[in-house]
Amino acid sequence: MKIATGTASHRSIHQVTKNIIKDVIGDMNGTSDFLLVGFTPNYRSKQAYEEALTKLSEESGTSNIVGGTFPGVATSNGYPTTQGCAVMSIKSSDIHFHNPFSYSNIRTNPKKGAKVILDCHKKIEQKNKMGLFLSAGPFFEPDAYEQMKILDTFFANKFKGMFNAIGKIINKNMGKNGYGTANYADEILSILAKNKVNNVIGGATIDLDMRTSFQFEGTNVLKNAMVGTFFSSDKLQFDIDWSFDKSQKLNDFDVSEFLTSGYVQKINKEPARQAFLDLIGISEELYNESFARYANASLLYLSALNSEDKEHIPYVSICQSILNGIVTTIPERMLKKKNINADFFTQSGTGIQKSAYECAMKASRNIEKPRFGMFVNCSNRLLIAGDKIEKENVMIREAIGNDVPFITLYSGGEFSVIKNKPVFSAVSLHGMVAGENTDTAKNVVF
Image (tube, rainbow, N blue to C red; front, side, top):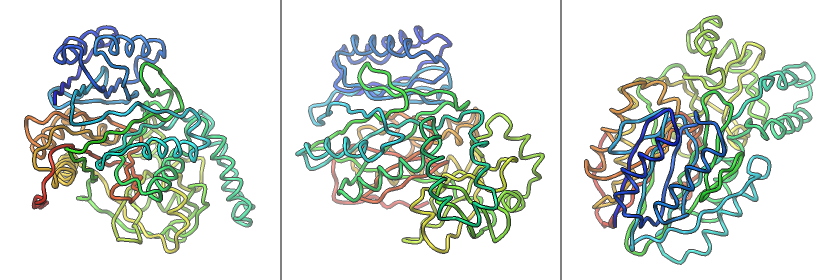
């Protein structure tokens, strides 16, 4: 097995591509079996990404490429960048890299997207399989929240059944441009888990300005689509896990009233927006000022309590001054449960680093000799860590081995199927590690 990784930074996509070809593709001598490619979204032009992917394909000798645009990318041997590219190139006789798949209408028809993944999964005969899929992330129109004002009306509270349906229509319409990402990603995961797909890792492409993002399948550049692939092997094992920073827990609360469109109306039986601000101890003026630029992604998030196994799973909560309620990324299947209790957690740089170590250790605990890793990290964590984000990569290296290559994509929503259980979350880190099998699991202590 031969693996090369690298991260390049430059304001010019042409220069970035040249650097990647020299430093990553050059190490492989034009013999790659698979490329995972992450560009940052600042280059904007679909044509520019197409030209870059074509050059990478020509120089690497493969069109088996999966990737997309992310606000930050990193590899094990390069500093994270918010203006550049990260690539992992693999050639191995021990792993079969299946042809990439895509589905263009993923926002409005996730069931068909899930079927595309299932059809690929069913064709694989090897006993060890790992799926990777990347999906279109949030893209908000300027008047996105104006469309939601109807959910605050007297009639919305009076006739919840009818307005649940209206809320779903709003979700579907806004979903064409980004709203509703949580629901369609979670629906895909649930379908995969029900059909005995054991392990899949994924994330959403995103631009922090919520303007545009692209997905890559081969040399094709798609928008509002899903792309992905499967790895399979008779010799190597793929394992997966996830974590988030649980170190700073604030108040707990009850989700008292909600619409299944993902809109929380009351928290602790009080109007949700004001209750939200009271719980986190911040004035509305300061909150709005703090998140004026990134109004659609709060650095303060709620974590709904999973009633099945009492595990916390974090979801972003968004407070907007024009709304009485809270927009949440909690999927509909979670909101339909009774007695929804949640806790607030805030993050710190140290907590992020520790959770990165935890994720990498958990993902590699059943693997004796890790060969490589792939991680999907939240872009909110990137914002929180700032220029200290490299320390998170240091913790990953410490967990899986200093010489083990890996790639990290900073996403707009992280999701996995882990041992047949769907996990859609936010402000978290999901990781996959591949390596040699072992019958003795590592003792993992945090």
